[in-house]
Amino acid sequence: MKYHDFGKTGYKVSAIGYGGIVSSQHFDEAAIPGDGQKMSDHHVAWAIDHGINYFDVAPTYGDAQLLMGNSIQSYRKDVYLACKTNRRNRAEAEDEMKESLSLLHTDYFDVYQLHGLVTEEELDECFAPGGTMELLIEMKKQGIARNIGFTAHSEPTALLALERYDFDTVMFPLNWHMHMQHGMGERLRQEVKRRGIGFLGIKSMIEKAWTPEERYASKYPKSWCKPFEMGKDDEVLLAALKYAVSLGEDILVPPGNFEHFSFALEHQDEIFEEPLTEQEKELLKKRLTGVSDAPFYGPECYGG
Image (tube, rainbow, N blue to C red; front, side, top):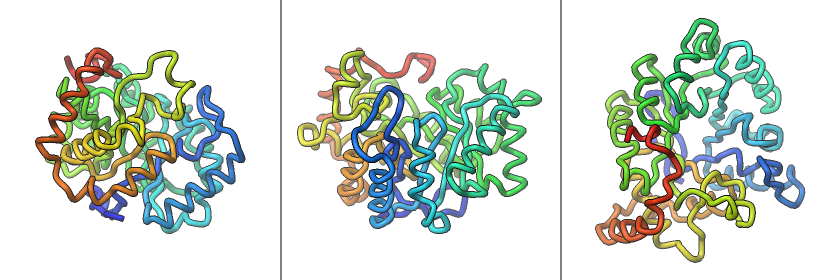
């Protein structure tokens, strides 16, 4: 496993993170057949055995907190655990935070994050009196959250968040399609690097948005957007991963299925040690023809 310094946190983190959705059995409208706890136990143990030390989860990931929490309990002291809240006021966020601590069998988080920021109005709510930031700042002072960060799907909103508080981590889509076609993430990645903030990249293995018919008929219903299909798109998938790494992420978080997670892990040498080639860039540019009319984020998210 490759390990990276995680911004100013002082953590040495695995270059690939475990996204908690991988552990979920019941997620959104998806129900994965089989023994949910047994499946989660296997996936978490496999990840630990392969050197993964960063685990990220959220209350919105179906039953992931329950299942992953049970699976990770015996490994807690050896891993970094990150959680999130998408509540925008302190009272609701505090209830959610306490439930997360209970389900994850821990008394602290290594990282706790505002989740899924899109609009400036959401940011205003978080920073208003009685907003969620009051709780996060207090959690950090008390050691309940060793570091605090945010996840965002809007670059303008992410940049505004960095103006309002000295966050420790940022999670953001670093996707070949959205960056190559729209420049999404370019300003943010430069600002994150300038400030020395830990940077997590999501959506790096995604091809395009789902159509309404595709998601639940696919092999990957727990993925928010359509990932490249392994066995068919391996060459372009590797190019997309290398493209994301070239944008400066510290941790790559694959989509919410074990297949893509294990693919990234098994190809880590190529992804992190072999630079993106001009041939690979051209391969990605050719794929833009089929996906450029189906961006999975609107103009408000990349500032267009």
